[in-house]
Image (cartoon, rainbow, N blue to C red; front, side):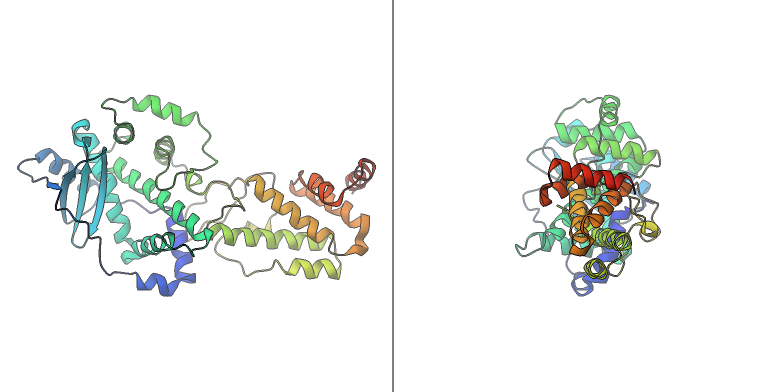
Length: 381
């Protein structure tokens, strides 16, 4: 049985806590109603290979119930329609002509995995999906929810790709099916594509809007089989310029912990009062033990018993934000003077923010001599 991604569990936990009324209202209710009047139904007698591949995929995934298959025109693709009591899979364009039996099982497994996700947690993930879809269509929606919707979509496709691999039982087959669908080619080299994926640095995350880039999906499948955490493809670096709802919580916690450290370094009433403005009750994510270090990826606590995720890289924009946080606190009490600035420079060096000296210089307009003097005092600490 496939397990959902940690990202799915984390967003579900957040939505239940923060938007419980909206989430509850979307539990159950109507299912997808897609008009299929112009679609061709693939009956078992006329298309036994489709139904055989479907039985194989359903058995591997533990999916029970009826599955209907339809064909429509257009570019090669496949889609899942969620209906009560049965699954509906719609093939588009000449896709079926390009797939062998194993690849077809992979494609059907991908689509049936969507059903597994929507039925898990008594429909809880489906309710979140509906909520995020509705939010994405509303111009008043905060950007954090729009980014959550994007990442949720990426995570859902990675989960469905795992369904494809589970259904066919072979990495090369799953990647071939993915490539044939993405490229429209009838013949592809899965091994070469996996080498291509391994040669890329995917720690910056996917910029896809609904699906991760194909090379990232192949990379994620290969590394998932190796037992690696691949969710960095969904989350990317911790970026203050584009947080989702989870990163917004994490950034508040990092800000609180760092502000508390600055207040310990500059123990005056004015600095303590300014630092208190960053205090916020801890959420489900955070920096373990209040550790503060920014020149290395940030270790984030797992959520709901999920495996420990890969440490999150910290985006340049986030480091610059932290530099400004430090500078605001370092100048909150004019009486600290040069001692406070030198202490802040020394702190920046200890926590891995070498950018701070340039930020402080730009904002305060130091002369070269003044800069050298303050840096020298910081080095003596």
